[in-house]
Image (cartoon, rainbow, N blue to C red; front, side):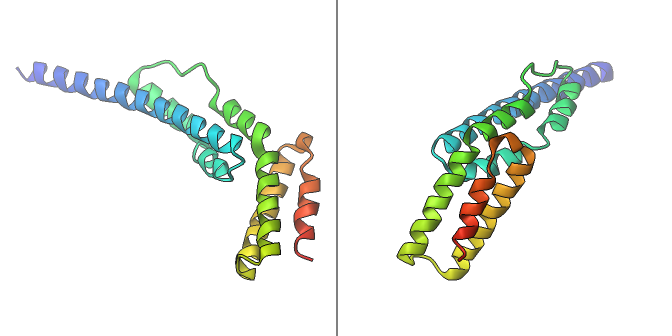
Length: 148
């Protein structure tokens, strides 16, 4: 009788591990879709969504192992990279234009403008180093010109 109980508990645990793995993969796909939607709109929130996926590979490996499942054939790191390469310049441009507008209309406090400029400079610099082929340096120069 106790053997049946242990077997049932093991089966239940395995089924839960399989559900957790499936839910995790669906969650990754949903966040990739959300990031792409933000990217198409030039919305800087894309970067936050993609940041959440930074360490997804190790989590995915652990969940797959626990569920005795094969790793998905999709390389999520490559998917994140593809989305960034496709949309980062448009996001920087849109944020730059928004900053220009806020400065000209004086619709934000100088502290908030400075904070946004610094954030955009950081983003531009970070992604320029990560993807030099995207030639984002000119955006850094344009953003720095807003300070003057």
